[in-house]
Amino acid sequence: DNNGNYIVGKIYNLDLAKDLKSGDSIISLNNKKFTNNQEQKDILKNDKKIKVEFFKNNGYVILDDVYTEKECDSVVNLAHKVLGSSKDLTPLMNLHRSSEIIQKFMSNKNLISFINSYFQDTALGLQTEFFFMPPETVGFNAHQDNTYVKASSDSFVSAWCALTDVDKDNG
Image 1 (cartoon, rainbow, N blue to C red):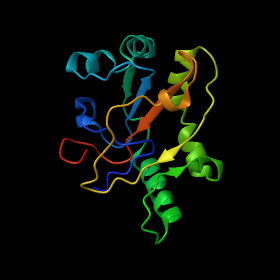
Image 2: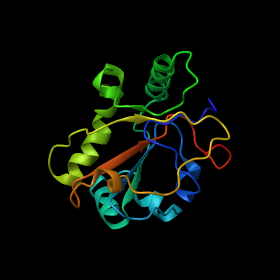
Image 3: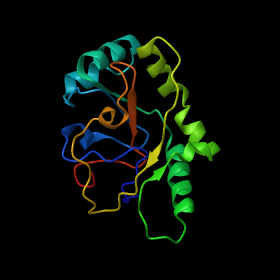
């Protein structure tokens, strides 16, 4: 749909988010900046070691096809069910604590495998956020989530998951 719903947030005014489709995820680390070019995309297609190295060097990586459209739709539907008839579009925090759908979503084997490879250890989920971003909503300025979390260096990653298609016209 064109409602612009995302599990973690909506990136505003960054070239990186122009070509994402639902099911893609952006991973970011500490204070590294986002960039985007075709050569980087081509290198990252299949090799997990290359993806981890790219992530270490650039502070982000795009993991294609992490989620199916059906999985994304189930999260969007759940969020709208939780919202009910309310018009309050305040982000829904930590739905994973009460929802098997969100717990399963954040435990996705492809996402967890990449994060575990990066840390060379077992990842633990900290929180989830669902942002309602209807058309014409101003998104977020570029920022680092660790500014708020204050985790030690190289101990915290954020996964931004597009639940609907993102292109230059809607996101």
